[in-house]
Image 1 (cartoon, one colour):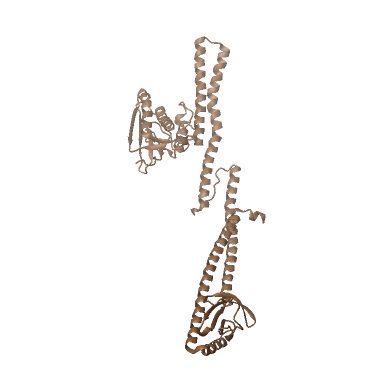
Image 2 (tube, rainbow, N blue to C red):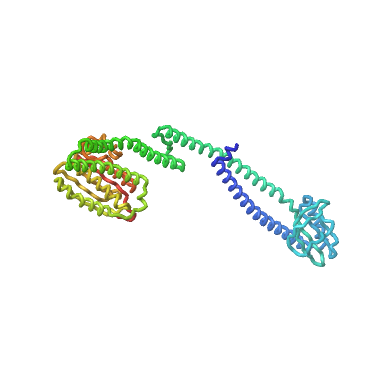
Length: 456
């Protein structure tokens, strides 16, 4: 029972029931006030009509005629339903069902609720008084108990509404709790499966479009990202060990050789230069890993500004033109449309540099590299680098952005397999995606990024 009342669903259900009861009470008080005003006005109108009718009888038939009329009317009605009393100028009773003129009754027209003794029974009534000719006094009243059945029905209806609302609220709370517990249990089972190592486990999605379905989609997206990070981390350790082992082994071999052979100064300095190169390679690996860690956290997103992607790309192309000329490769650049995006110009320049550097690394002599920046039909901005090199096989292409991945075509080339990983991380940081397609021959790598708001 304590667990039931600690349930969020039951708490919300009770809150909504109490809110419904408060609204029902407010509505009931408003309706009761309107009822009382309407009934009071109707009673007063009926009493005034009765008083006016009796006054007309007195005017036409005199006191005797009115006396007979009142006695006849009393004999025909239900006991105490209508209260009538006719007195002379000294308030002595002439006709009616009251023994005497009630004390404290003002001699003025208008409804006055008072407590009377009618036929030995206390009765709460509403009265209207009239002063007739020659000093005669007329009292006309109605027993307020005549409206009690309607008031009881109103109270019964209100009570039934309260009972129905309570029952419906409790039943709704139980059903909502059961549904939420089922969803929570699905989440618990999924999390438990992930904790046990099943990284592919996901929450079921019913495509209903409701809030819980949206939450499931969001959690599944988070789990996809976590799986991606965990799988990346699981492979990073082996990759780091593998890529660091070679330069460190070479460094140790150089230093050990220097220690054992004690060569000449020229050979010693040559070996020292090689050792420095090995250390620089290790530093490059760690710098790339630190940059990837920074991109994964999204820390650079706070410094985004409006950037002309074409200008950033043109500067990178200009920087690599001498290297392309030295290799004898054809290097072209063109742009089209407004390519303003919101981003970090330094990171974008580095991503474009990595793409161009990859193309220069693998393109052959007299090869061709084409760089294009433009707007796509869907409004997104595209930064594409295409070459006619060996490209990436269909088998390796899905894994090309993984950290330290090196395909068959790059086995003998320098590098640590982090270039495309950085480009992919930069694209995701900017809300875009890196796409790798076959250039027939070669590879076409393109970053598809959302255009800045207001760009045309």
